Amino acid sequence: MNEEKCRLCKKPLPKVALAFSNRVAIEEGWCCWMCMISDLGDKKAYQVLSNKARENREKRR
Image (cartoon, rainbow, N blue to C red; front, side, top):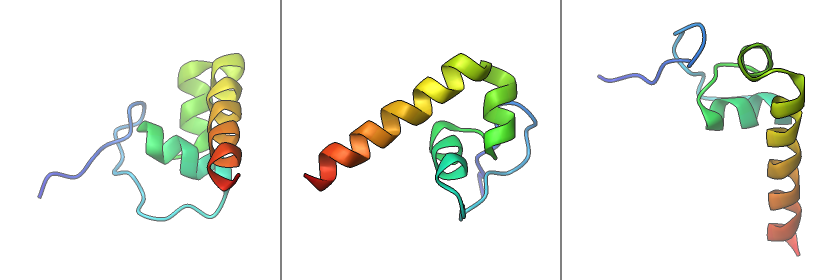
């Protein structure tokens, strides 16, 4: 079985996320928001989060 690993810490990616920020991080290849923000930095990580929120808003319209 080929499990996907976090881009930063190399832990297996979770199957479920309870928070929107963690869900986005998992979709992008990190195991959690903290790994994503540590890897990308604040500005880029929040931009990814913002883009995903905008995309979700557009889908609901």
